[in-house]
Image 1: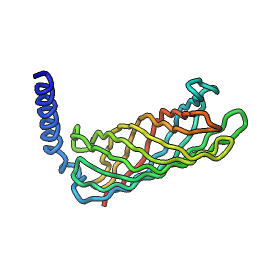
Image 2 (image 1 turned 180 degrees about the vertical axis):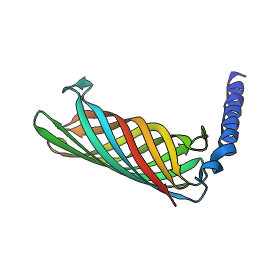
Image 3 (image 1 turned 120 degrees about the vertical axis):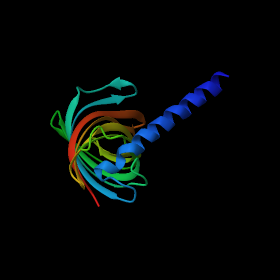
Image 4 (image 1 turned 45 degrees about the vertical axis):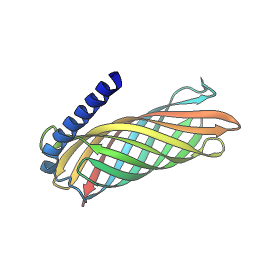
Length: 187
């Protein structure tokens, strides 16, 4: 009985969410069949953890990323992203490049110009951390689009991003908390 009640509540919440999103998506020009090209510049505070122990002081880094997305509906937008990060700590440079497919949800508009969004990405990364390593990356993020024109948005975003590597047989995690700003063009 409890499982059935929880299932019904979940369906009701999803139905309400879908209804609310459908009511205002066409007001801001992001419609089914459109493509998006976006760029974000990010500042991040990062930690490095090896075998569960933080090994260096937190590092500040910058990242530039580009994405291509296609709106299956005004709500669901699968995308592919390419990002590059640079950081310097204790005189050493570290470069990271990642390729991440993802899914973005363009949520109900707050007004004609403001569109909140949330997304998830999972992919592969190349990390030059004293030696070259390939690993796994995942991220969660959300933000707010300001529709500056019918087909242009200014984007502000925050999130969490984690790289999972095997460095010299040790599980190594790079954890980022990026704050980002950028621009998207819809066509």
